[in-house]
Length: 102
Image 1: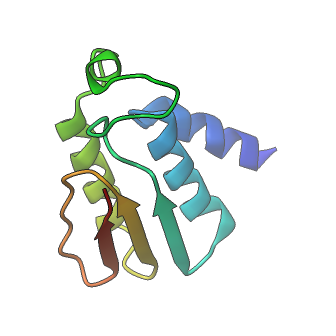
Image 2: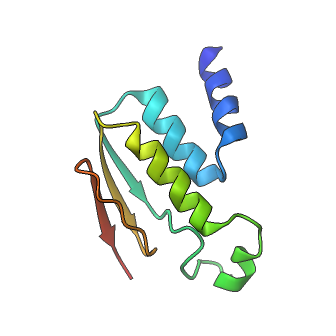
């Protein structure tokens, strides 16, 4: 169906599955208030004993990921986003609230 096609397209163009989930959820579910929790661009320690260095080496560039997300958010002015993250991420759009946690 069309939802599966949208998701496949999103996965192809998004840099990570986490960002693909944000894009898919935002576009396909039509909600006004969206909460993104735990998207940290490989800048924090992870569960299961994996260190930052192990995950950064995967190849996704954190700066590119932040830019991709910011560009996407800029196209979603009619929605409100709350991002709870331990990452060093700033977004000064009126519809985006970033909450930093440790």
